[in-house]
Length: 463
Image 1 (spheres, one colour):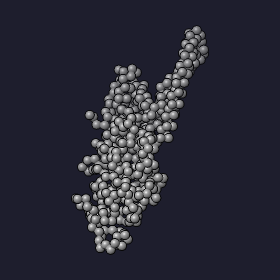
Image 2 (spheres, rainbow, N blue to C red; image 1 turned 180 degrees about the horizontal axis):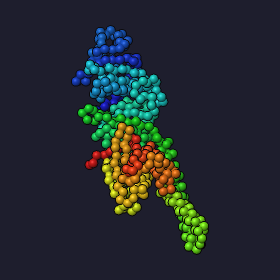
Image 3 (cartoon, rainbow, N blue to C red; image 1 turned 60 degrees about the vertical axis):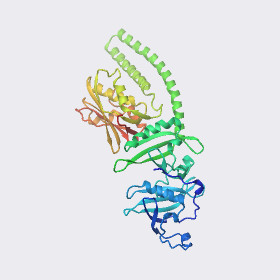
Image 4 (cartoon, one colour; image 1 turned 45 degrees about the vertical axis):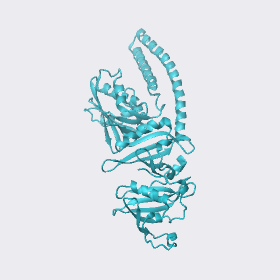
């Protein structure tokens, strides 16, 4: 729909019907809005003119053209019976609009409710419709990201009123470096219903860029044609800048950890070497037992040091949508699994919003399948889309996990190796609100389910 933006010079005079006035109109094919009823009645300004139009034949005799234009656009957009939409028209006072709402009725008419003035510069007056009280900007867009409506909170984010945003494209405000990511995120929403969440930079009326996070959703009509794209956008500038500062500090700490880990490993390698020599020199069962325990402790220390290397990247980079099939393929191609594991994958086109360490999560699960299922164990990867989101399923044909162990395997004292691998995997997934559980049957194989929330995945069709 090509939404017309009212001329800023043609703002309303505010000598208008009182809030709560309802006009019942009958649209025709030419776009004329014939008034068939008014509640509570004609405005005093009309009665004073001695008008005998009770009710008047068209809405433009009661309301200024900018208001009628917005109402007509809302009626054009509301295609289904019972659909309710709200919009805003300029009132002539800086930082204020007038809220209007339309609803399609079963008899073919449309009710138009004339609202009160809404302050856009910090809070709002009483708002009972839509999302007027939320600090997030709730907006409606077509396939080209054109604004058809937005909530008054747009003033605090863009420095622009809803009427000023109407008819412009959201992409006009997106930072050039983020444009491709935003388009790629929303592209699947044009061909089918879905959800996309993304952080990017958005400029205001002063051309100043701030970080925001948007959740995009799309709806389709009964004939499967695109209806509208909805966006919920909130400012994240302070949070993102704090995260960037934290990542910078983490990078320095990781560098220091790497240096210290290298020095510890050098000393540990020497200690293990001396223990091996000592084991060959001493005799006696008691001495050999003590040396064996010392060697086990040294081996555990080495394992923990290696673990700090494997997981030092957690949170170092911001999460992103990762190609699950590509990650799994990379893990299965590692030398630890080459020729030892059979695999089946049905993950084409699946992307999940996760920390960059997701590869290590897949590695830990496959490692457990090999350890407990033995060589030539079969590991299968698939996914299911449910009302709650997407479930990534990793199964094997090994011995499975006893009911009493299902929770414990994810704790620091779990059964895998030294009890840290799957525990760390849960921590990586939790960074983006993803959960993991084991639902297999003992004796019939393990089954890990990774539960991704609705706004944390997207599935792209091949080609």
